[in-house]
Length: 244
Image (cartoon, rainbow, N blue to C red; front, top):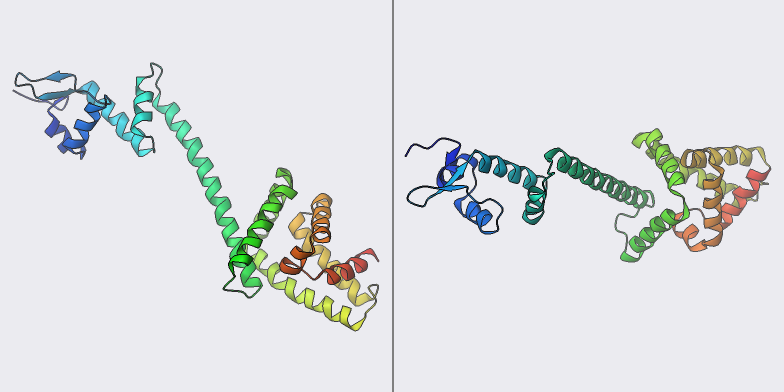
């Protein structure tokens, strides 16, 4: 019997597609791909329609669909491969966004602990940082979080690193003036206060609501201020300078 590529026995189909005979048997068993014909000797024969269906099965499987989902899709009279691909693209886009957010958070954690010169944070410190990040999600609105993210994108990695490197020195300078008892209205402190505002603005985009929420968080959560930011006394001192 002469066999064409539109009328294949199971072994031939397996050889041409790279699938195993066992896989094709399984597809038949679950009703996913049942050969449309048989030879006189009762061998399975796959026609052109079967091969097209197999192509759809393979494509959907590569997109991450389960065999049960694929079967449901192919049994729908209005089945459209394009619609399925669009659905999968939407799902993959969401997954990519989630992975991007996770990457940014991990990068932020690494940079934070490097800034604190702590290469081996304890479990308690890691949990505290995660709690802080979660509180940010609840503190700021989605629009405010977008503003913060946009500011980070605007600065870029080099800009963010530069700001992170500047903060410790600025805090040290302000603390030195506080320890000396320098009047917050002194020109030196006024220059430091101006730069402090500029650095905060790089984070907030000049959004007063974001800056007010940051200030409120430090005032209401002294533990956060001690562990993740300037000393509360330092915050009070620089606050007075900013009011001058």
